Amino acid sequence: MTDHQKPTSDLQPSDNETLSPLEALRGSVLFYIDPMEPIGVDDWEALKD
Image 1: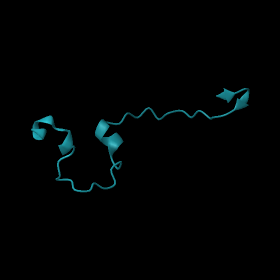
Image 2: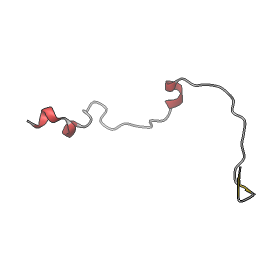
Image 3: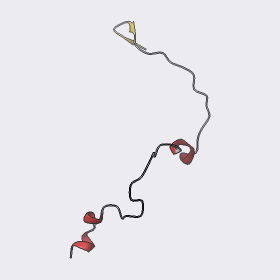
Image 4: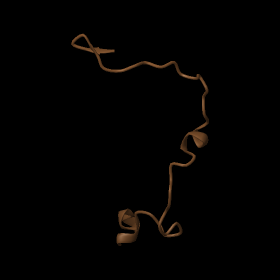
């Protein structure tokens, strides 16, 4: 790929190995604070009444 005739990136062949969605996300969450707490409690309209 070039930008005004100057090389800007190098293309590498892919390994054609397809990952399942779970495999692709493995290791992406490093920690989670309060995993048992509900998320977005203030966003529920039913709780505002």
